[in-house]
Image (cartoon, rainbow, N blue to C red; front, side, top):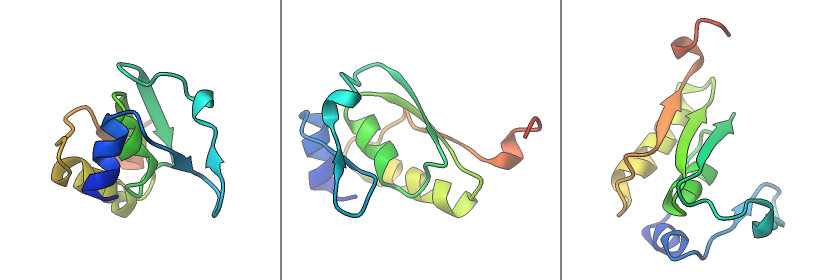
Length: 96
């Protein structure tokens, strides 16, 4: 995730790639500003930072601490320094 991708997402120009070559249609997501978004098995620093930069309040859940650390790294190092990104691991949830 580059600073340019974060800035573009903040300006409304973003896409989410879930397959090697095809983006999810943006209208499937609607306007993300101020929406609560839960990313399941979502660590890795790809979709969560885009959603956050597009204005969503994001919680990222993943069983892998390594993947969640990637989301946190992007949130802390990119221009927005997004304080709305939260991460949750399996260890944080006794009901799992």
